[in-house]
Picture 1: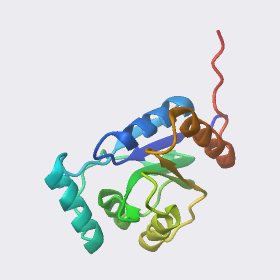
Picture 2 (picture 1 turned 30 degrees about the vertical axis):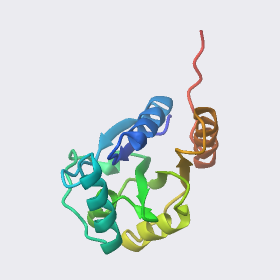
Picture 3 (picture 1 turned 180 degrees about the horizontal axis):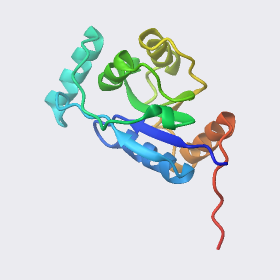
Picture 4 (picture 1 turned 135 degrees about the horizontal axis):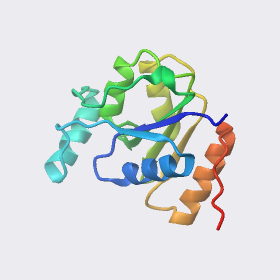
Length: 166
């Protein structure tokens, strides 16, 4: 029986959304988005995101109501802001009680933020097991390198990626 998977993510600029959509499509997974009106696009939204991230000020978030117990695996994605997961995802983990049987993390970054700090922050907010985590460098990795990294990630998670046949 195939693993029932959920991909849930926050994306301010669309980079993390693209990775989440790729994962959901490849894994035949459900997908859901976390939103926060506080961090709009543009220079002021960027500055507010950075300032709030350094202060650790958690914003209110919007997301669909989900039955996490229905999933074998929940993949949570976020950009890394000032070495930590984006604030809306930190809000999500601060309020989360349970996320299915297993949880894994995927982050997008531009190379200047260590993924371990982001994982440690999730573990501080949400003290449950995280099966694995990956950071995808959106500035330095090309699409092929990111696709290969995602494939390695899914293999480590024990997910069978459906193979397309002509």
